[in-house]
Image 1 (tube, rainbow, N blue to C red):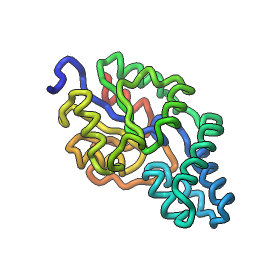
Image 2 (tube, rainbow, N blue to C red):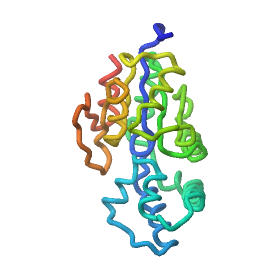
Image 3 (cartoon, rainbow, N blue to C red):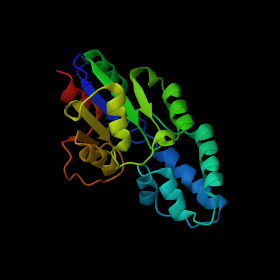
Length: 214
């Protein structure tokens, strides 16, 4: 049953959207390239790794290394260094608090594994703003497949007309497009993404607040 007592559902990506993890992500991949003696790509390429499913990136660049070993290495580095080399964005907590006060249901859909996501949210103190979260571990199909977004909508009781997804990757927005929802692309990161079919562009959290809080 669709919700009628709330303002709407806003689904956020995590890395590069809620948490500035660009430096951490680059360092984590650099450590893998060095450990397994694989040539390291450019910084621009490393930054682009934020968004696509982790398993897709690892399979492409480390085809001769066992996936479980790679995931364990990546996760161990993440739990040790992710929070240290990451930060929230200016105006973020004020925006999230305002969205909750306005009556929105907030959710997260990330390509990050559950343990790493929970660690980030708890460390930066923003877990309290979110009603529902879906990590890579719960995704049957990665973004831009709409399956996980539709799952969030089903569990929270919102129709596509009342759902909006925000991310720093075109894949995030394409997930919304494929699910029939609206979408917004944040542009405050280092990545340059195409914008075909995207409803809004957000240069900062202040613009997100202005879009949803009257």
